[in-house]
Image 1 (cartoon, helix red, strand yellow):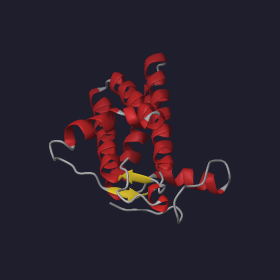
Image 2 (image 1 turned 90 degrees about the vertical axis):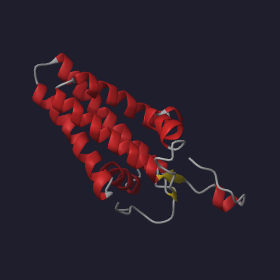
Image 3 (image 1 turned 180 degrees about the horizontal axis):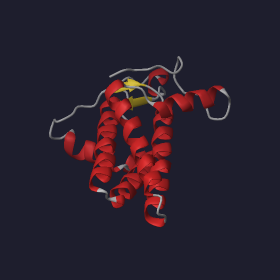
Image 4 (image 1 turned 90 degrees about the horizontal axis):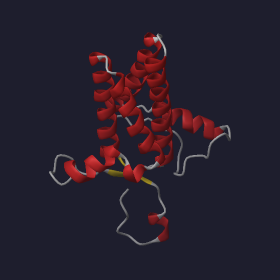
Length: 166
Protein backbone atom coordinates (compact mmCIF):
# COMPACT_ATOMS: atom_id res chain seq x y z
CA UNK A 1 0.00 0.00 0.00
CA UNK A 2 1.25 3.43 -0.85
CA UNK A 3 1.15 6.38 1.44
CA UNK A 4 -0.30 9.67 0.38
CA UNK A 5 1.95 12.65 -0.19
CA UNK A 6 -0.71 14.95 1.23
CA UNK A 7 -0.62 14.87 5.01
CA UNK A 8 -4.20 15.93 5.68
CA UNK A 9 -6.06 13.43 7.87
CA UNK A 10 -8.87 13.01 5.36
CA UNK A 11 -6.59 11.75 2.59
CA UNK A 12 -4.17 9.61 4.62
CA UNK A 13 -6.98 7.56 6.20
CA UNK A 14 -8.54 6.65 2.88
CA UNK A 15 -7.96 2.96 2.19
CA UNK A 16 -6.06 2.27 -1.00
CA UNK A 17 -5.36 -0.67 -3.26
CA UNK A 18 -2.69 -1.11 -5.93
CA UNK A 19 -4.72 -2.45 -8.85
CA UNK A 20 -1.63 -3.55 -10.76
CA UNK A 21 -0.55 -5.70 -7.81
CA UNK A 22 -4.06 -7.16 -7.75
CA UNK A 23 -3.92 -7.94 -11.49
CA UNK A 24 -0.46 -9.51 -11.11
CA UNK A 25 -1.78 -11.68 -8.26
CA UNK A 26 -4.82 -12.72 -10.29
CA UNK A 27 -2.69 -13.56 -13.34
CA UNK A 28 -0.33 -15.59 -11.15
CA UNK A 29 -3.24 -17.53 -9.64
CA UNK A 30 -4.65 -18.23 -13.11
CA UNK A 31 -1.27 -19.53 -14.31
CA UNK A 32 -0.60 -21.63 -11.20
CA UNK A 33 -4.05 -23.23 -11.02
CA UNK A 34 -3.99 -23.95 -14.76
CA UNK A 35 -0.51 -25.49 -14.56
CA UNK A 36 -1.55 -27.63 -11.61
CA UNK A 37 -4.50 -28.99 -13.58
CA UNK A 38 -2.73 -29.42 -16.92
CA UNK A 39 0.31 -31.09 -15.37
CA UNK A 40 -1.82 -33.04 -12.85
CA UNK A 41 0.36 -31.76 -10.00
CA UNK A 42 -1.46 -31.37 -6.66
CA UNK A 43 1.74 -29.89 -5.18
CA UNK A 44 1.17 -26.76 -7.28
CA UNK A 45 -2.35 -26.54 -5.83
CA UNK A 46 -0.86 -26.75 -2.33
CA UNK A 47 1.77 -24.09 -3.09
CA UNK A 48 -0.87 -21.78 -4.56
CA UNK A 49 -3.07 -22.31 -1.49
CA UNK A 50 -0.21 -21.30 0.82
CA UNK A 51 0.60 -18.23 -1.28
CA UNK A 52 -3.04 -17.13 -1.30
CA UNK A 53 -3.41 -17.75 2.45
CA UNK A 54 -0.33 -15.62 3.11
CA UNK A 55 -1.71 -12.92 0.81
CA UNK A 56 -4.98 -12.88 2.74
CA UNK A 57 -3.58 -13.14 6.28
CA UNK A 58 -0.26 -11.29 6.02
CA UNK A 59 -0.33 -9.10 2.90
CA UNK A 60 3.06 -7.52 3.64
CA UNK A 61 4.80 -10.89 3.17
CA UNK A 62 2.69 -12.13 0.29
CA UNK A 63 4.96 -13.79 -2.30
CA UNK A 64 3.00 -12.00 -5.04
CA UNK A 65 3.67 -8.63 -3.36
CA UNK A 66 7.34 -9.46 -2.79
CA UNK A 67 7.86 -10.38 -6.46
CA UNK A 68 5.86 -7.35 -7.60
CA UNK A 69 7.76 -4.90 -5.38
CA UNK A 70 11.16 -6.59 -5.59
CA UNK A 71 11.29 -7.53 -9.27
CA UNK A 72 8.52 -6.13 -11.47
CA UNK A 73 8.55 -2.53 -10.24
CA UNK A 74 12.38 -2.14 -10.15
CA UNK A 75 12.59 -3.57 -13.69
CA UNK A 76 9.81 -1.17 -14.78
CA UNK A 77 7.70 -4.07 -16.01
CA UNK A 78 4.75 -2.73 -14.00
CA UNK A 79 4.12 0.54 -12.20
CA UNK A 80 1.87 0.93 -9.17
CA UNK A 81 -1.67 2.12 -9.85
CA UNK A 82 -3.07 3.15 -6.49
CA UNK A 83 -6.82 3.74 -6.19
CA UNK A 84 -9.15 4.48 -3.31
CA UNK A 85 -10.61 1.12 -2.37
CA UNK A 86 -10.96 -1.03 0.71
CA UNK A 87 -8.42 -3.90 0.70
CA UNK A 88 -10.55 -6.04 3.05
CA UNK A 89 -12.86 -7.46 0.35
CA UNK A 90 -9.85 -8.38 -1.78
CA UNK A 91 -8.18 -10.15 1.16
CA UNK A 92 -11.48 -11.92 1.86
CA UNK A 93 -11.60 -13.12 -1.77
CA UNK A 94 -8.01 -14.40 -1.51
CA UNK A 95 -8.89 -16.16 1.73
CA UNK A 96 -11.88 -17.88 0.14
CA UNK A 97 -9.71 -18.91 -2.81
CA UNK A 98 -7.09 -20.23 -0.40
CA UNK A 99 -9.76 -22.23 1.45
CA UNK A 100 -10.95 -23.78 -1.82
CA UNK A 101 -7.37 -24.72 -2.73
CA UNK A 102 -6.62 -26.10 0.74
CA UNK A 103 -9.67 -28.35 0.47
CA UNK A 104 -8.67 -29.25 -3.10
CA UNK A 105 -5.19 -30.21 -1.87
CA UNK A 106 -6.58 -32.39 0.91
CA UNK A 107 -9.03 -34.08 -1.45
CA UNK A 108 -6.34 -34.67 -4.08
CA UNK A 109 -3.86 -36.16 -1.60
CA UNK A 110 -6.13 -37.97 0.83
CA UNK A 111 -8.99 -39.35 -1.25
CA UNK A 112 -9.70 -40.96 -4.56
CA UNK A 113 -12.20 -38.20 -5.43
CA UNK A 114 -9.72 -36.38 -7.65
CA UNK A 115 -12.51 -34.93 -9.80
CA UNK A 116 -13.73 -32.97 -6.76
CA UNK A 117 -10.24 -31.71 -6.01
CA UNK A 118 -9.63 -30.58 -9.57
CA UNK A 119 -13.11 -29.01 -9.74
CA UNK A 120 -12.22 -26.85 -6.72
CA UNK A 121 -8.93 -25.89 -8.39
CA UNK A 122 -10.78 -24.96 -11.57
CA UNK A 123 -13.33 -22.87 -9.66
CA UNK A 124 -10.45 -20.74 -8.36
CA UNK A 125 -8.99 -20.63 -11.88
CA UNK A 126 -12.28 -19.43 -13.40
CA UNK A 127 -13.02 -16.82 -10.71
CA UNK A 128 -9.48 -15.42 -10.83
CA UNK A 129 -9.71 -15.38 -14.63
CA UNK A 130 -13.00 -13.48 -14.55
CA UNK A 131 -11.51 -10.96 -12.13
CA UNK A 132 -8.39 -10.60 -14.28
CA UNK A 133 -10.16 -10.24 -17.63
CA UNK A 134 -13.50 -8.65 -16.80
CA UNK A 135 -12.76 -6.96 -13.48
CA UNK A 136 -15.53 -8.65 -11.50
CA UNK A 137 -14.38 -9.95 -8.11
CA UNK A 138 -16.89 -12.55 -6.92
CA UNK A 139 -15.31 -12.68 -3.45
CA UNK A 140 -15.56 -8.88 -3.15
CA UNK A 141 -19.20 -9.09 -4.20
CA UNK A 142 -19.89 -11.69 -1.48
CA UNK A 143 -17.97 -9.59 1.10
CA UNK A 144 -20.00 -6.49 0.25
CA UNK A 145 -23.31 -8.32 0.64
CA UNK A 146 -22.25 -10.02 3.87
CA UNK A 147 -21.34 -6.53 5.11
CA UNK A 148 -24.79 -5.24 4.18
CA UNK A 149 -26.26 -8.08 6.25
CA UNK A 150 -24.02 -7.19 9.20
CA UNK A 151 -22.06 -10.45 9.02
CA UNK A 152 -18.80 -8.74 7.99
CA UNK A 153 -17.58 -5.16 8.39
CA UNK A 154 -18.90 -2.82 5.74
CA UNK A 155 -16.46 -1.60 3.13
CA UNK A 156 -14.40 1.41 4.23
CA UNK A 157 -14.85 3.74 1.30
CA UNK A 158 -17.67 5.87 -0.02
CA UNK A 159 -20.13 4.14 -2.23
CA UNK A 160 -21.00 0.52 -2.45
CA UNK A 161 -19.91 -2.50 -4.43
CA UNK A 162 -18.92 -1.47 -7.92
CA UNK A 163 -17.76 -3.49 -10.82
CA UNK A 164 -14.52 -1.73 -11.73
CA UNK A 165 -14.05 -3.51 -15.03
CA UNK A 166 -10.63 -4.00 -16.57
